[in-house]
Each structure stands twice: as structure tokens, then as C-alpha cells.
Length: 186
Image (cartoon, rainbow, N blue to C red; front, side, top):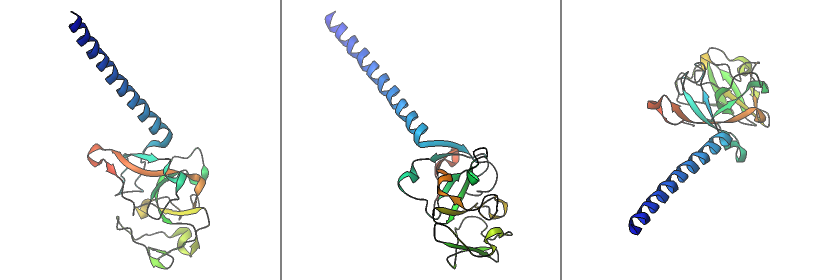
């Protein structure tokens, strides 16, 4: 009976240890997601074909604590710092110091044609970028991938995005599950 008790006790201890590890892993995961990630559902067609309306994306809120957004990153922000607005997801086209202009429906960055290779590059509306504009320090010029169906830096209601308006970097698509994966950034 001593041997049997010893075996039962070690099996119970192993089960409790395993359950404790699972709870600890779950708690660590929750803390990481809560403090460093956000789940966001894309609303609208501005980022098609990269991110469709209704897709859920994890946003890395920590990524820009040590670095700055780069051209091609998909960022999440609230336009003009409006706390009541919904989150926007747009692609960074111009970084501080860049000169941006939309000529004949195409984007030029520092005088060179900018192509992302995503969707339709030609635009019907140049907006604020009809005349060459310089992106200020601590500002970013953003466009949606669906250029003709996007509210972005070309519009006065959005304009250039200030660094402090940026929530984070769109990182991983988690829904729909068949499109699960890391988002492409140029």
C-alpha cells in the first residue's frame, strides 16, 4: 500500500503541476496581449485587397516604443487625435522629411514614383497632395491600399498623422482563419 500511495501522490502532483503551468501560460499570454497587443476589426474597404472589411487584426502597440514607423508599414491611429473616432488602418507612404505629391493619379515620394505592388495604384483624387507637400518632423503621410475608396492623408479631415496619434502596427491577421498570418509590410 505504501508503494501505491506514493504512485498516486506523484501522479496527483504531476497533474497539479501541469495545471499550474497551463494557468501560468494563460495568465502570461493575457498580460502580453492586454498590455502589448490589441485586437481590431477592419471597418470599410480602404485597405483592400490587403485587409478586407471584417478581418480581425492584432495590433502591436509596443513596436513603435523603440523604433519609428517605416515606409510601407500598416499603422493604426485615430485621426487628429479624436478619441471618439474609430480606429483607422492605413499604409505609411511618407516619413518625416519626405516630399509627397500625387501627379496624374500616381504617388511620387521625393520625386520618384512610389509603387506598393498592391491593388490599384492610380487615384482619382489627389486632395492635399495635388501640390507637393513636405511631411513635417514627427508626422507621417498615409494612404489606404484601395486608393479610390479611402479616407487618408489626402483629406483635410485626416491630414498627416502625428506620431502621438499612432496606436501601433497592424501585425497579424487572426480572422478569417483561412487567411491567418503576418501582414505584409513593404
